Image 1 (cartoon, rainbow over the protein chains, first blue to last red):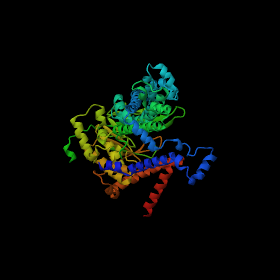
Image 2: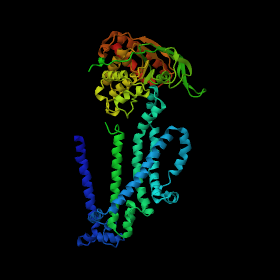
Image 3: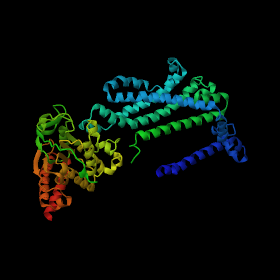
Image 4: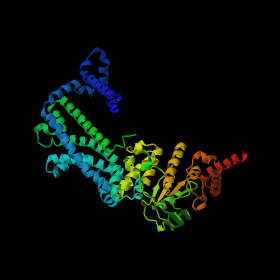
Amino acid sequence: MTARTKVLFGSSLWRGAVSIVVFLVLWEIGSLSKIWIKGDAFEWLRHALSVLGLKSAYLPWIGAVPAPTEVLHAWLAVLPDPGYWQSWYMSFFRVMLGFLAAMIIGIPFGLLLAVNRTAFGVCFPVFEVLRPIPPLAWVPASIIFWPTQELSIAFVTFLGAFYSIVINVVGGARSIDVRYFQAARSMGSSRRDIFWRLILPGTLPSIMVGSAVGMGITWEVVVAAEMISGGGSQIGGTSGGGLGFFIWNSYVGGSYEQIVVGMISIGIAGFISSAALRALGKRVTPWLSLR
Amino acid sequence: MSSDQFSRPAIKAGEIIASHVSKSYGATQFSREVVKDCSFTIERGKLTVMIGPSGCGKSTLIRLLAGFERPTRGTITLNGEPIGEPGPDRLVLFQESALFPWMTTYDNILYGPRARGEVTQETLDFAEFLLNKIGLQDFRKKYPTQLSGGMQRRAELARAMINNPEVMILDEPFRGLDAMTKELMWEYYSALYEENRRTNFFVTTDIDEAIFLADRMLIMTNIPTQVRAVLEVDLPRPRKFLDLVENDKSNEIKMQALSILHEEAMKSFSRGSKAATDFVEAYSKRINRATTR
């Protein structure tokens, strides 16, 4: 218990907090450059910017981004809006749908490829040809193939996680030390027993790695797919299209603060997903986190 | 808690006879013979130690005894029957730890009986007995990464013994452990052996280890390997390492074994083997020390 509280309130928490505060402060200073850059003390900076061909009297890029205080303001404004939470829900729902489908299909498929030479010979070439196709390249095709927009987004998200899970499962199952199999065989283990008690637990660490990578790709894909497809389903009206559509909508509506709100929301959502996955990983592979 | 309170299964001690065994690898024309016309007996209820120069083909012999590979010529029998697939009647302990990292010590030890669906109260009692005997009763819920190197080797010993094999085959199981731990392992291991007197076959390159453990010692020739000499190590049990250092008989056996190994090393040395150089140098230094003293 003490060890856990130590981690919670230890140096790593402090470093994390300091890094976020410093980031916010620099952002605030940078985006308020419109105001403070007008002073006489910053004559040299205005000169340097004009040499770079920038006529505007504020720092490039960061000066055009709304300040964190303004973003916070906009955020507080959308917090009570059920449409904002509907966006969260929709994106999470799509990510989970695609991700779970990728796990349910990808893990057994990867294990099959790893243990069965015939299956590997038949399936792997096709798999390797399809794998380099970016999931987003599937968007138009999947809109045509699938009856609803919701299904086409789910399919594209599924593809994002599927390849990385399968590749990791195959690699993980194949890299299990041959001595474990020899030991098991000489102790009278059946093929079935070897699969359930050696191959499956031996592959779990790789399954978790593949899932973590897949989860990241899933968020990238879902946001892009929502933007492209214009929000997918009509559930919840214009604001029910997920966080990707929330950003797109804010852009079209000219609310730059809300764009940043959407971006940060995705960051937080991705963080929550990864943390949940890490916690799951610790539970299913307890032998890795000990020493 | 004493280990004597747990019942344990009766020991079935098997006997392995290898006769005229040869094994070569590669295509016929360029094949390399590793074992050549090798005959020996692993006697029932005895601890037979096989010692020979490294790279002489001992590990190949073990794979043949275990059944992972078949001899090119000759036969190997267990209790008169030709040996077949690897099975729990002849268990092999490999050079490096092969404990399953995803199982606790206890689950590792019970792996074999569970895999065969043979877990009875007797098995569980035997598991307790073994945990006590190897001093790991407080580590039953730990994973292998949480155990020291010596503990892992002991747990592996218990994982093999619980299957009550007719023959235990150990391939340099204590290699890579430091000197202190090694001595500790010898004591744990020989205590287990003395308790059961099951047939044990122990392969090593360490002469002190061989003399501490053996009832019989098989000294092997260089590659292609054959039995060069058989020494009876007729020392009282239980043995203590420090006693053996002082014991004349043990030193006599040691010098006898070393001189045979030296002859073998000289043969391969004259054939241009680099591996033998170190041994020849070490041996001549030892002889010089002994004569000048």
